[in-house]
Length: 347
Image 1 (cartoon, helix red, strand yellow):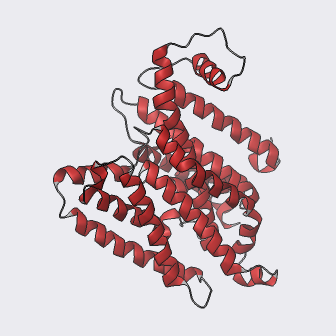
Image 2: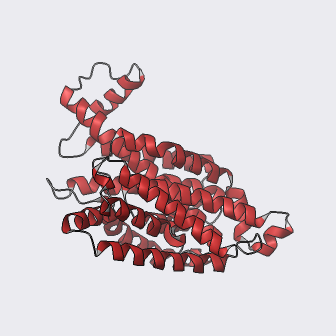
Image 3: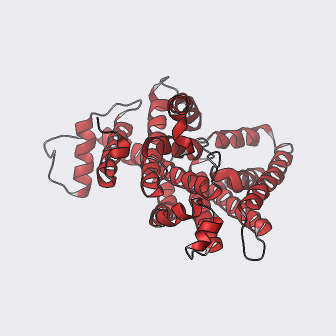
């Protein structure tokens, strides 16, 4: 029997890409208004000018639902999930710690401060972009502060960076709690709604806001997979082969932080994906980042969109937000993998 680990990289990528496409079509089809797969494919083909399914009639209502509601929502989910999967993989590689995730150096805490500032001072009431922009700025400032505190003589010791991230996260958490105590109940509910994370009400503006930083960041991280393999071996080994460790470590940290911050700013604070998806893929494809990073990118997008799709249809007409679904669906599967394949984590 051929296992995923024995598949060649191109074959495995094709397999994951097929699942990526299938979940995307499922997301576009399922919802409070079910749309047949043929109609979904027909509209997509007509949009890009392909001469397929030209005999299928797509109603104006279906066009409106697909084009203005589900397509931007699905694209945001694919981007954010892929970005969190890649960023989590990079963070776990840099720290050589399977418990590391994109929030470990203050990204999520900084985004929370930015979001609550936008809400507390009324900026979120002026434009829909206020909270995402404040969350993005807060994330980047938090990461900058963490790196500044950890850097010593041009070097970034991993343990110092980890401790600095914990301290900055605690400080920002205290600031967030202080601001939450002085805002009114309506603003408090708005903040709590954001912290759960969700893809509802995503528009094309959110897609355009995230596509550049997330896609470019993922591409560069994929190109640096071989360098991440060397960093995982340890600082001494990396220096022995001539690698400027601090430069590559800082570059990868910056990329992972930028991608995560952008994802948080357009979808809210969605946890679990950046921690568990790299775990799952490492157990399936092994620790080589040349295979692991592409797998985590595709699996992150698949997982987040699948959770969002199930959340839309599980208790109609209500929706379970994707931040809840990721934990409900991901935890049992992760525990299953951990129980049956835990020996692979030590390899």
